Image 1 (cartoon, one colour):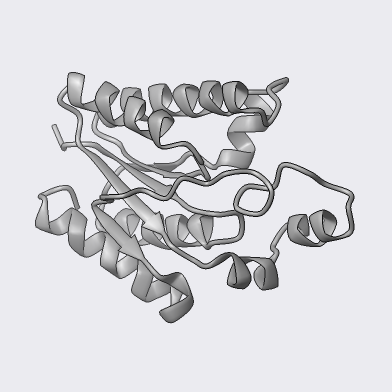
Image 2: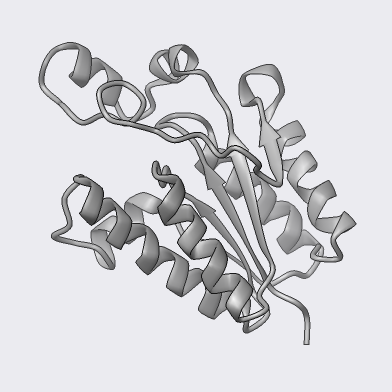
Length: 178
């Protein structure tokens, strides 16, 4: 059986996580890999409906995503998880779940500065926050704990989506996971 893995892409809203994940999914799919993207927005709608954005609910959401990711990965799927996951302890709990099951886990920090994210503002969140219509925006008025030792750090503002996806693919290849 093909080895699965979870590739966790963490970063601020509008950092480029989902765009990179879809580019990487296409690249892996072209090479015959079974791949799934667990998009944070879709998970919130279907698996974590009813959860808020306080620390406890965010932790619960990340643990649910981590559970599903590990389940798929241990069954041979390469799982790409583009979610903010703002708290280090939540991400570490997911890493430990994978380690306990012997399932490969790769943490990628999409390290896009908040100034760049607010210009991209894919969902209009930064504009709503600036207008006083939204509070609790990660990286602005809610914490984001950057990974101290990610497996890979991508500065998406300094390279194309294709280059970002290629760097993740190269790491997966190096580890025998692509």
